[in-house]
Length: 319
Image 1 (tube, rainbow, N blue to C red):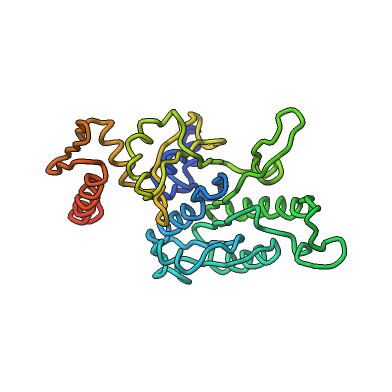
Image 2: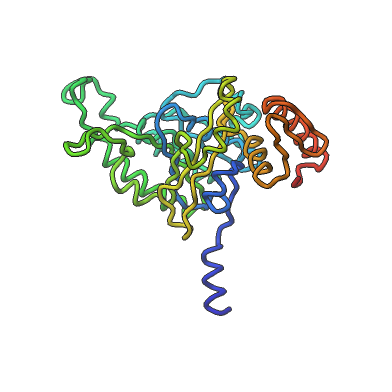
C-alpha cells in the first residue's frame, strides 16, 4: 500500500452516517463522522430540540441506537409521539432527563461500557449544572444577583474532553445543542456569544448555526411565505460557523421549519426542482409531471402525496 492510499484509508476509517436532514448533511459533507463533535447552535425558540429529535429518529430508523440527554427537561410525551419515536423508545432511542454533570457522566460511563450507541445527543449544554448548584445553603443558595457561571466551566471542560476521547475510541457520533447568551461589552454593547468556554469552540469539529433566513436566501423565503402566513412554520437557514472536516466553506442553506415536525424536506425538494427548471412556475400556477395546481399551498399538498406515493412505489429508492 502506497502512502497516498494509506492516507486516504486513515481518513476514511469510519463511515459517515446521514442525519436524514438534507441541509445538515450537505454542511457536514455527507453526514456525521464518529468521534467528532457536532455543535448545533442557535437562539431560543429556533427549533433546535425538534431538529435534534428528528436526527434521533433518522438514526433509529437506520437501526442505530441513540442516547438522548434532555438536560433542559423540556421534552414531554407528545414530543416523542409527534417525532415518531414511540416504537423506538428504550430500544434504539434511550431517553434520559439528567440536569447535572455527574449523573450524565455516570450514566454514559456505564451505558457505553455495556453497549456503545451510534449517537449521543446532549440538549442542551447550558442546561447542565454542577451538583453544588442544587444545594440551597451557603454560598450556593439561590441568589438572583449572582451571575457567576464559573462553577460550571471546569466540569463542562472535563466532560467535553472525556466524551471526545471516548467517542473516538468507541466510534460514537456526538451532537451537542448549544445556545447564545448575552455578553455586555463597553465598546460594542450587548452581543450574542455562544455559551461555554473557548475550549468548547476549539474542541468542536463542526459548529452549525440555525438562524432566521437572510437576504441571501430571499427567493426561498418569498416562495414559502404562504406557508408562513398559514402558520405552518417559518423559513430558516443553516450556516457553518466552524468546520475543520472540509476545506471549502458552504453558503447558508435555507430550509422550512414546520411546527412540531422539524425540517420539512418537501419544501427543499420543491425549491430545488424550481431552481432546476423541473417544476414550472408561472405566476401562481405550478406544474410538475402530471400535477397542475394553483397556489403554493395546493401544489405543496399534491406534490407531497405524489412524492410519498412514488417513494413507496420505489420501495424507498431514489426518485
